Amino acid sequence: MSFTGKYELQSQENFEPFMKALGLPDDQIQKGKDIKSISEIVQDGNKFKVTVTTGSKVMHNEFTIGEECEIETLTGEKIKAIVQLEGNNRLVANMKGLKSVTELNGDTITHTMTMGDLTYKRISKRI
Image (tube, rainbow, N blue to C red; front, side, top):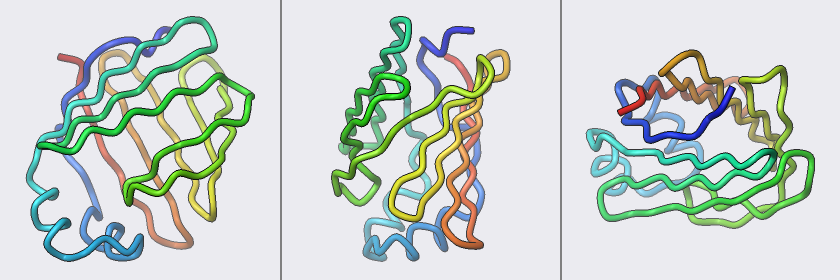
């Protein structure tokens, strides 16, 4: 199953408490909570390029399944991580106390981030 495509954010759960826990300033949280971000994923075998555009903020990440890479987080920090593929539709990464799971089902991507007992969930549809 290929992740390649453009996806628009449809809904999110626990955005504000999760972003506060990450340490984002309140003004950024307020600005970001109502913006429909666009995620563009290009998959070439085990190589991925992910671009997330939220208003004027653009995040680029590139990784190869099973190899250490540098990931830019929501706070702009760059951290080392290894992304694994579970089955043929789940990307899983553990980084600095944060677990990220991106699951593709048909034209819907569900991205869940968990930090301690706090979970942030985003649902995006292919456009």
